[in-house]
Image 1 (cartoon, rainbow, N blue to C red):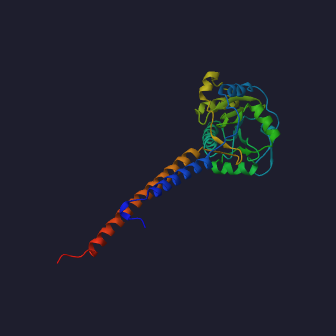
Image 2: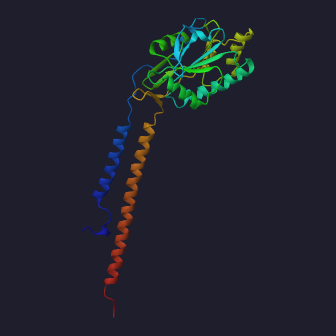
Length: 294
């Protein structure tokens, strides 16, 4: 039996340190991520694609609403239409963008009338953006604005509609890039204006709508100004789960590593205290058993 006065066995120290290191390395391997391959979205190219469709018609596509009923875009003709794209698995940007658009739409309806225009929000990531998922997304964002539908579509419909509206998205090695844009479509079904960003000045949306409703001209911004307003989203995209998520892997790995080191330090300190306590108890026991002088 080892004498407790000798302190902690060096082998115990070595085993504890190696155990902490192994746990750290294993945790790093478990949380390491291999993002999907691809090229990041170039802001100028994406913006040029978006602007290239201004003045062009949008096809008569049929989508599905949250109740499973068909919704033809042709049924929205005669009034301006706002078209936005989201991804239902997104937990940050898409909800933030949608809620801001909700406030902007509410202000526009106050200024122009509740039935002056319509809004459709479309899920672009299949197969996850189903009619049910779109309905739940709408509920989570608290959108109960009149004349606003959340729609889903099949691959052929989405390919055509994103092309006609100039909406660009691309999975990349660092995430999933896309333009945040609201496409303003006139009553004839032609792209009239694009509005960009998670948030924007309300006249950027209300001005073009007012021009379409009342004929009052709205100012047009040049391409370089628009580029400054474009927000490219770079979040981590998990193709297996079909969801956006923040890349917490590195932070989790660091946390686990620090936890392991802390546990190892605690074990060593506790061992040292226990050894000192055992040594003290041994001294006290020896002192009590020693013969007392006469």
